[in-house]
Image (cartoon, rainbow, N blue to C red; front, top):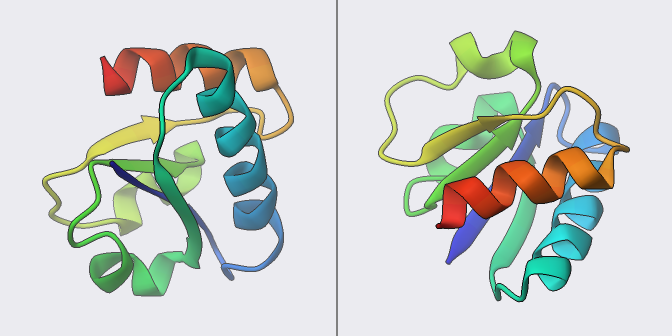
Length: 90
């Protein structure tokens, strides 16, 4: 499974989200490749992703995708990320 975390610049908040997504996946026992990128590169970076993690304000910039878009309100809330990823990965 491939998961892409995105933010505006692809450096700070997407890296935090990537790290916390990896922690959440470990909690639920799911193996996945998690990467971080900026919103401008999401089309390429997430072309074969199953899940895209992002903030509410960036959803409209993602464009057409076959991936499930999971909106994370608090990138530091491991419980929120775990719950939403658990739903997304089934």
